[in-house]
Structures are given as structure tokens and as C-alpha cells.
Length: 531
Image (cartoon, one colour):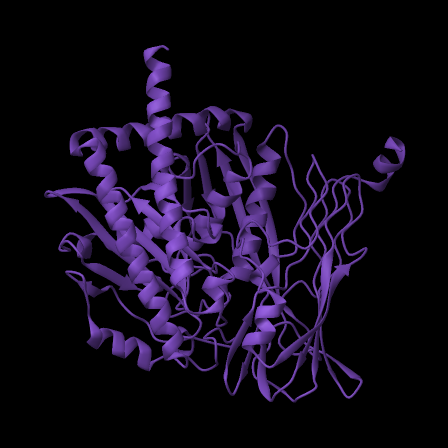
């Protein structure tokens, strides 16, 4: 074995150890969590960060949180320098890069005999953090203060001991304090597990060797990414998408446009500018820059080999900029609670622009996946159902998948049996929405039909989109079907606007959800010719 090959094997083993550690950290949080949004839908992330604020490894979790943990770690660096062993910082403040107020992040140092090996960082979506509506994601919020409590960076754990005074403040601002306490305890425990495991890894290699290997590993990964980026043609490419803001079925919707300009340099570096997007809005569909950056990293990841690790090797090859005050980089206190819907379109626009530059892969639009959940509050709890997945867009290589979460959110569905056990609802129907995928040489994936019967009084809030125009096809492929939301009471159907808050429901009411199909790729004529 040559020296170069031996070094590559050593770095791969080292990287696999880091990746396995990050996954163990995430799994430990999921197993210890209290609320279904974590233990069933896996809406959490975990990462290992270098002392310089670069990803060493990221758990296989939510891609939309991809660029968040390292961004927050860098933002918290002035605070983190004062942390000692057993300390954990916590924040949900979008000013530090947290995507929205439901997402609490932790940062804890890994100190080994005085050597700072890096940081362990976690993110967890908490079911309710206050605000004007249960679930803390009102579709009509005009400022962040309506979405819940904003927590600046502060020590939640000091020397291994929970700051119970701070904990009591956080819990007092939640409608589900028991659930939130259980999830925060799981997040703390997972963070401490990560610190312990990373400490063991550092001791196994020794501090000097670990420090050298982490630097060489990221340089090695960056070189692998840059080699693949040669598939992109130098130049400037652009694409846009629009979100339909539709709160009233009887009124015309407004459109909010995102615009991605992707510049490909000769060395393969991507410079992505989102400044052509619309100005920020007084509704919760704004996307903080850390999430816009995540959407870019996810888009690029779609064009790279499956075996490439997700770490700073990819981050170093992408630069995302946006003027302040845009929907893709809002100035606070702009509301951001429903940012996932717009972030999915940011990602789609970037995939479109990158596809124009790539020599072999392009893709049609997708449904939006669990960026379209509904929230139903009743006397005994809050149901957040992320099971409203739809069809994936087809690509130049294959047909789109049926009923699957999109590549941005990647959450699991809420199992029907568990949902019915936890809440007074009956899932009457779940089936494919046949024919909803756009036609073409490669057809788009189909969406689903989901009927939910409410068995108690409650209040319903929706956060959907694509009710007027379906996911776009590409290269002559047809668009996917639009989504539809319908409330059925005593046999009478009432169409619902996709973004509504505070809809009163009665026992026996049925919510009928029809999710979009993905766009098709290539023309129908090509399909006929091949046949």
C-alpha cells in the first residue's frame, strides 16, 4: 500500500468514527425524547464542530438544518470561549442562526486536558414555545413576537448541573411544559453523550494526532468535492420560484419570489447570491440566512457522489450571500415560523440553476414534503402532523418517487397508530393520489390522499402551498397536480386556503388533504418514441 493510499484509508477511518459518533448522538436524543415530533418524526440534528466553527461530521438527520449548527457555533464563539467542562449553551434566537423559535440549539465544548478538540452541537424542534397559537407556528404572524419566546445564548447547564431557574422560564412559556422538559432533558443528555464520546476519540488518538487528522480530513474531503465540481461548467446561471400566499379562499393570492444566481468559478467554487429575491414580508415565510445556506448545501449535495461525507469539505466550496431585508435574509424581528415552505423553494431554485451548469443531471420540481404540516390543538394536546408528503420530481435519470419527504426536510411520517393513540382523531384513509405526478419521459411521483376525522373540539392551523400551480416539470415534462385542503362537515365540503390559522373544528369534522405530485421530466413525445 502506498503512503498516499494509506493516508486516505486512515482519514476515511477517522471520518467514519466522527460520523458514527454524530449519529449516535442523534439516536440518543431520539430514544430519550418525549414528544412524537422527535421520537417518531426525528426532527432533530447533531453535529461535531471544529474549534474554527467548521463541520467535522453531521448526523444523517434534517438537511434543512445542514448549515445551521456550524453557523450557530461560529456566532456563539465569543460566548463559547468562556465555557468550561460540562457547560452547555442554549439558544433559539434567529439572530444567531436558529431557523425559527421552535428550534433550540445547544453548543458544548470538548475539552481534553486543556485542549479544545471542538464542539458538540444539537438542534431539536420543540412542539410549543409560546406565541399566539398552539404549536408556535401561526401562519398569520406579522412579527416574531407572535411566534413564541426568544432565548439569547445562555448557559442551560453549568459544570454538568442544569440551570433550573432558566429551565423554569423556558417551561413557563410553553403550553406543553412536561413535553418540553422531557425533550430538553433528552437534548442535554444527548449533548453530554456526544462530549463523552468525542473525548474518548481524542484520547484514543492523542491530542496532537487528533488535531492533525481533523485538519487533514477536512482538506482531503474538500479535494474530493472540488474534483467532482469539475462537472459544472463555469459561468453564471439563474432560476426563480414563487410561493403563493393564500389565507382566504375567496381572495386572490400574493406571490413571493425567490431568485438564485449561481456563479461557477474555474476552480469549481460556487458563489450563490439570493439578493434578487423579494423583500421580506410581514408573514412567517421568511428564511434566515443560515437556512438559505443550508438549502444551498443540500442542493449541491444532490449533485455529488453518495459516498462523499457531509462536512466542511462541501461548505468550503459554497459561498451564499444575500442583501439584508430580503425574504431569504430578513432583518429581525421578521416572523420566520413557517420558513420551511419558502426554504424548499430556495433549494429547488438552486437545484434548477445548478442543473443548468451540470453536465449530466437536472430535476423537476417536487411537492414540498413535510414543509406542509397541519397543527390541530385540542383540550389534551397539540397534534403536529408531518405526514403530508407528496411526490418527488423526476430527474434526467429516473422517475420521481411516490409520497416521500423532500430532500430538504427528510422527516419521518407520524405513524397512524401512534397518532390515533396520542390524539382524539381517526385516520380514515391514506392512499396514493394516482395520476398526480406530472407526465413525461420520466414521470413525477404521485402525492397522497389523507382523510383525518377529528373526534373532539379543536382549532386547526394550516401551512401549505402549491394550491394554484403544481411542482413544475422540466425539459418538456408536465407539472404535478396542485394541492387541495378541504374541511368536510355534515357532508358539506368547504375548500380551505392553504395558510390559515384558528379554524374551529367540531367532533366529526373531516380534514381532506390532497398533496401535490412531482413534476415530470422530458416530453411525452420522447416517451412515445422510446416505446
